[in-house]
Image (cartoon, rainbow, N blue to C red; front, side, top):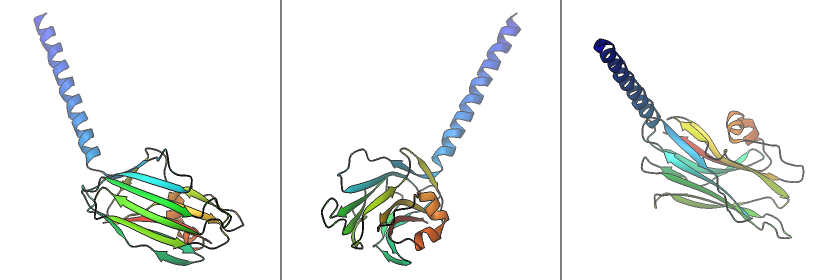
Amino acid sequence: MKKKKLFGVILIVIGIVICLGVGVNFVKKQKQEDTLKFLKENVSPINTECADYEVNIGKNVGGATIIAELWQDGVCTQSSPVILNTQTSYLNISLLMDGFGTNEGIQGLNVQIDTNERVSSMLTYFELPSQVRGYSFTAYDNKEVIKVNAGEEHILAAMAFDLGSGVRSMDCTSLLEEQERVTSASCLLIVRAMFT
């Protein structure tokens, strides 16, 4: 009888050790991935669209360069870059429309990209065509985690402008996979991240 109890206790202890080992390995694997986590902006002014990200890089990715690109009929105008390093933990992208809600319509777009690092910030103004009627904005789903690797590019946010003929639906992944949608757009702003 004592041998059966001892054997049962040994099995329970072995089971606990195995569960702990599996749990620690799982947590260790998760911490080794470089990720961006989209944090949905709940409140923003009526003329602003925002995309906020929790940044978790430094395991396999050494940093990233973030740029805004305005594509108009195959021509690209780029912003100055914002550099993310392994200490960056937060990224905010704000797209502020100049003239939204006025009789003149949207005349331009201020793109501001900030991080928790004071040296990594950028503000660029893009002038838009006079016939802008509206826009469509896309980023990611709330709390969506994007796994990133060195050498990869990701589109973090996009805003397509309606010049009178409507705007085709879009998402960040399809814009990245179908580059011709970007280069052939009448008027499209994207925020691109290139990881190193």
